[in-house]
Image 1 (cartoon, one colour):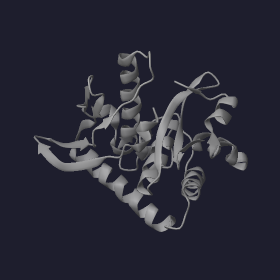
Image 2 (cartoon, helix red, strand yellow; image 1 turned 45 degrees about the vertical axis):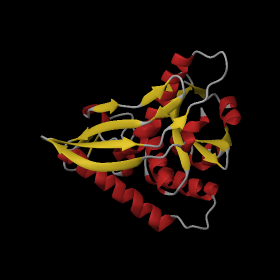
Image 3 (tube, helix red, strand yellow; image 1 turned 90 degrees about the horizontal axis):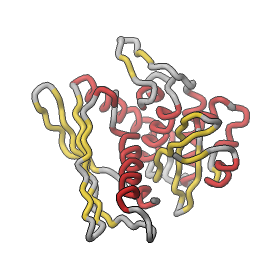
Image 4 (cartoon, one colour; image 1 turned 30 degrees about the vertical axis):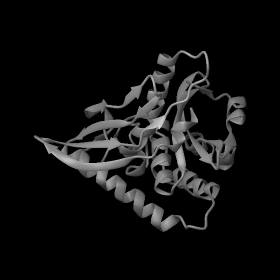
Length: 239
């Protein structure tokens, strides 16, 4: 459901609760349209999962160690979906989250100009990830001993490693900081689970895979700004 591509988040203030900090993320309610004769319950579950993937791509740090609650509501009569999520952070996680946000804003200010097209912005981000990180299937440890899950944005953005999920989260964070409508796609290729990015450029959807771009740096553009049909012909299958 491409309505997802139009969802952007606003962050409420940080609230301290005991030893943790809670942040509530919300967005404006919108009508969720579904195809006729489609199982509404399954469609809503699939949509919520995709929505969460998009949400997680920016705001979660060390996600396997955080309390995450989906507080979203769906009115079955009006078909209105109201996004609302709650995430708790330890003091260290909040510090890392703020550091990541700072890195994202700094990179955007230094590398993106207002006269760039969406494609040019995406290309800049794509090449930055490929030229400044490697793929890693193992969790990574920072010099101070902090351990990061291989799929966290910090693995790529802070430590230049991470797996496909980390690459897509980094692409999403940098993209959204530059007013691109992007999110992570989940699926399989060559029999294995994989994640890549989708960009909505003026209503048209393009697939981008920085992970495979790293594996094939000399032929990286094979994985940039391609139609979903082209990706499917290359073996990509959505979940």
